Length: 254
Image (cartoon, helix red, strand yellow):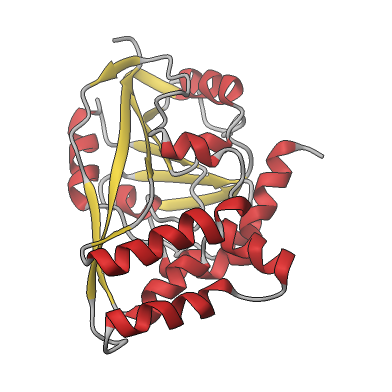
């Protein structure tokens, strides 16, 4: 089976949940990246999913292309007047050579055919153009008792159902090739205030959760909710939830 198609299928069952429950990236991240680029005419968000990063670019660039091999994810992406979405692989953007100021890859680089993708990036980036790739690892809750339950769920319950590529996320993408003049990347965190149903919706959007359900014919977040509820209290009480971003930034031509 083609690896790209196999990876695409991981997210088709959770495309709706992915669009609804995935956290948004911090505005400061997009402000920082925009300050680095030579112009703001065109940006390409590769592996865009349902547009979590694409929309952050759309407020800052005249034209944005979001591409993903998963048609269900693209169908769930919100429309924006500055954005064109296209179903397609990372190795064939369809963009003109030297036309793109910024390429972004949010939580998707570990799925790519990296040699083909980097060749395409180097073809489409304008001189002094920038590429930024980032991931976020295991979610963290402020309350230790809640965090311990969630870490157990991540590691021991759905842990065996994570695809092998997940290791690259846990390694902050440091083991992936990045053939550019690398720039110092600031630290950014994602933070949300979610009640328990929202948090469970996010956990249900994990590909590992979907694979667990397919294998066991039961939803593991139901049992998780029962474990979390006594420590959470009122399920509609919001809790602070964070993800540290691992960010790599490079420039074409140094």
